[in-house]
Image (cartoon, rainbow, N blue to C red; front, side, top):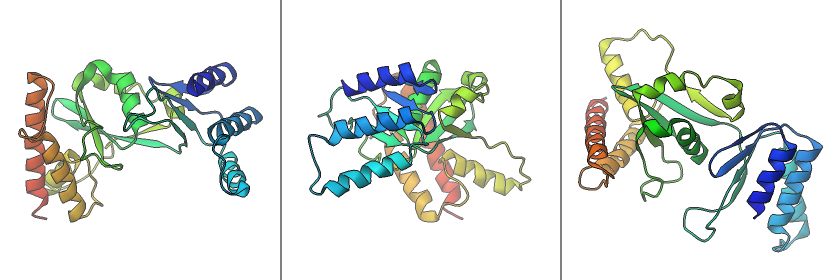
Length: 249
């Protein structure tokens, strides 16, 4: 109910906002209306559960109001008692999505649930494969993947417009021209296959490989269809081949 009321209020009084399926992002910079909204939401959340010391309440509220210039994320919660799905009111700086071209598809790497909802809202017909959030191996900072068909490239290239920049979805394209040797190109391609960069350590590379290998291994994965099963198998082979190259460095 609080989410519905907040959503209605934001749509009515704030011009700059972005709405996904279960997420609402308020983008307007600091203003009296925004300060009032934050104050009321904070009070609604904690009024019935006062802190042991009244100064704690004031300190936390002031901390939120001091950052009122940041975008605010309102996360809808229809089943508050279910595991992994809880109400969220958070201040967000920026969300990064790394886009890599891989054979006949594009792979998006990200760690934030908002990026997931953004990709579903934008590329739903083209999604081929993605790491499940409910998987136990997906820790808090797990680097998630969403694979989309190459036909989505035309849509991707039109996203550089103010509406999506305001949503604080920041894409990272490997567009810089690099003059590499053949061996360096092989290594860079292997790192991108795992969704990693050149600054990652051997331990991080191994950890990422083990997580993905477990996720996509034929004995542990549970693809929803025969088609996705073939993609899982292909992804597992790609991950294994990439690690075979990187573990010898």
